[in-house]
Each structure stands twice: as structure tokens, then as C-alpha cells.
Length: 321
Image (cartoon, rainbow, N blue to C red):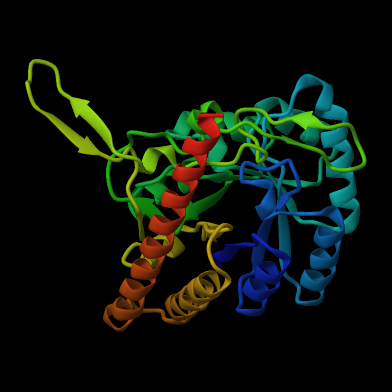
């Protein structure tokens, strides 16, 4: 059975998605995830959340998917050990060296590849499986048939996003460092010395540079066109039954930075859809789900547009300092 993996950008959001029926929630470790540290949880919050999740027989995944410096490995392993002792079911990780070290020190701890790994093909999936990942997040835009073929070929757990960008791959998710040239911050976890955020670290956050207008001119053509590097995503609907039948282990909802109400409604929608698909031995009609699906897409786009505009304006001010 496919499990819903939902975001927890705040402790309140993490509680809400579990109460709405998500089997698993992922949260960022303060200062160690790819998102802004305002969307991370402190360790005491993670411990509290994990205790609550265990009473529901649900899972907590912790993102420590920054790119740490060479002097920080000791701290990363210390955090991994602490989360394992609390019973956290897995870590979301990006750095190949960190995955190897965590697997070597903690053989039973679950490891999920983060979107920061930027997987694009089967050999990438095989590579991270061989490093020690239990679950890999698949590239955007794979069809259910392609997912099924990967599942049959590679003995590794699969995780798929429940949305995909509408346009082609002008930006590889997880590999963008453009925001680092605009905004620079430092963070401290209050118990250790301050650390300078790497190019892929929550202290710097994402300024949504890809959402600005960019001009592209093709060779041998006098005209140029203005577009964004990434467009708003399209939530999955028609592909969901195929992914479930293909045997994926986790269906992932993104949105740690979204509003609590929107994320709660997304989990509620997909919980009902997944339950209906899994309960029916026959192919179900998705027509009755179209209207609420379209409304969720509209709300997501509105929130994304507002947030992208705010982040870009903040980055522009920060870049002039």
C-alpha cells in the first residue's frame, strides 16, 4: 500500500497532516535542511512530534539534506544518532558522502534521497541505492509505466511527487544555487558555534529566482522570448491510480512553506483518493475528483505567486546591500 508523505513546515502543520491521515510527515532539522530555517523544527519539537506520531503508528522523517562542510560530519552523525534513539523512521539526505557515513554508523536507520540529489535516470537511482538509500525520490514527469519498469528492475523503495512542473526541465530541482548570489545569512543552533550556510542550506533559503522573467534568444534568430525557468506545478490526479498499482511506497506532497489550511486540504484530498483507489479492485472514475483538484491547483498557484513575489523583492533588497 502506498503511504502519503506530507510536509510539516511547523509543528502545528505536522500534527495536522498526521491527524488528516498522512502515514508519514517530513520536517526539517533546524539549520540542516534545504529550506529556510523558519520552516525547520527544533530538536525538542521533533522529539515531541515523534512521540505523537508513534501513538498513531505513523512515521516521522527528518530532512538533514544540506551540504555540510567537512568539519560538520561529527555534528551530523550526532544528530542522526539522536533521531534514531527517539525512534524517527528515516532521514531525507542529499550528500552522497553523508549517506555513506550515516549508513555505515547506523545500518538500520531509514534513508530517503532528497530532491536535492537531482536524480534523472535509472543509473542515478542505482547509484544512490548502492550508497545505502532505502528509498529514492523519482525524477519529475515519469509515467506510471516507467515507474513500474523501474520498480521491477531495481530492488529499492520508490517515492514519487504528487505534482510536476508544467514545462520542461530548464532547472533541475535540487541543483539550483542562484539564491546564494542574492542573499547571504548565517545561523547558529545556540549550542554550537555559528556555521556559514552552504549554497544548498536553509540559512540562505530559496528566493524563487526561477520565477522571475528571463529572456531566451535562440541561435540564428533575431527574436527572444520571456519566460520563467520553472512554472507552477500541476497536481497529479490521473496518474495516481497508476503509481499505486506500480508499487510505489510513498506518494509525496510538497509544501512546507505553504499555508496550514492548504496543506491540510491537500492531505485530505489525496487521503480520500488513495483510499478509494486501493479499496476498488476495478479501475475507478476520477471525474468527481476533478472539481476539488482544480480548486486546490488554483489556491496553490495563488499562494506560490504571492510568495515568489515577496521572496524576489526581498532578495533584490538584500542583493543591493
